[in-house]
Amino acid sequence: MEAGRRILKNMFSLSVAEIANKGISLVTLAYLARVLTPEGLGVMGWANAFVLYFVFFVDLGFNVVGPREIAKNHENIRRYVNNISTIKILSSVVSYSFLIIIAILIDKPIESKYVLLISGLNVFAN
Image (cartoon, rainbow, N blue to C red):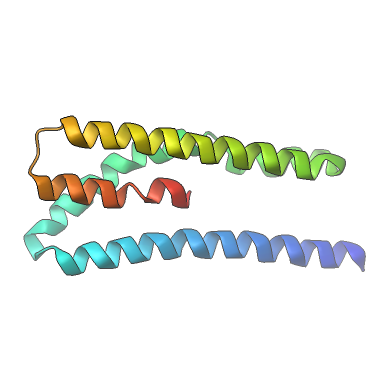
């Protein structure tokens, strides 16, 4: 019975994280779609595609390797989760900092830069 409870707890934790991830993406998309004109939606697509490169840097395969390593070694769950969370948070901050620098240096209208920075918040959702 204990294993079933643990599985339900883990499923709940993963579900909450996935819902939060999708929720942040939905909120930023809804906000930008409301503020931008229909012509501005192309800028939004460009910004989302640009931000995806930074999201790849933050992910680094931890979504695959983390659960695999935890399944192999149950005793070190807390250590794995703390290490992975710390690395992902730090890489998110570094990645978003680079995104800010690029947004400042890029030759685009100011609205495009704002869209890029707002879309860049998805780096933290990952």
